[in-house]
Length: 183
Image 1 (spheres, rainbow, N blue to C red):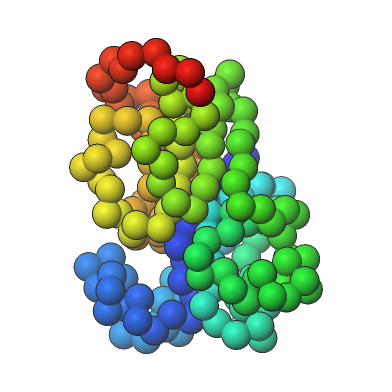
Image 2 (image 1 turned 45 degrees about the vertical axis):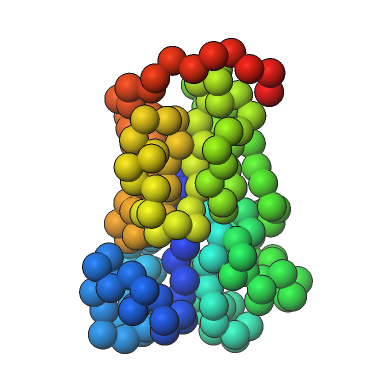
C-alpha cells in the first residue's frame, strides 16, 4: 500500500497557534503523539509512505526519536522547514529516498509530488495529479477544480492518505477543460 502525508511539523510550538483550528492540542508532546498514532494507525512496515516536507522542526535528537517511531518505508520530499534533515546524513538514513521533487506512476497517471503547490505541473493538461503540502489547507477552494491535492495533516487529518483514497478524490473532481499546452 502507498500513503502520503505532509507538514507534520513535529516539535513546532508555533504551529499550535498558527493552525489552532486543525491542531487542537495543548502541548507539542500531545500533538507529536497524535502524529505518531495517526501515522501508525494505517501505515505498516510493509507500506511505502511519501512525506511531502516539513516533517520535524525538532533538533537532531528529537527528530531521530520521532522518525524511529514511524512505520513504513519512508520517502521524504524536502520542505522549507527540513533543515535538520538536510544537515544530518544519519537522519536522512531513516528515509529510503530524500529529494526535492518526485514523480510516480499510478493507474497510467503521472503523480507529481512536491512540498510546494504548483500552478501547472508535468502533464497537468493531460490529467496528471499533483500532491503537495506547505499551505496547511490554504488552497482548499482553488484545489477543488484541478487535479491537485494538499495531503498535509491539516488538510486530510492526522492520518496519512492512501493512493486509493487520492484516486477517489481525483476521479470525483470535475475539472474545467483547459486548452492543450506543451508540458
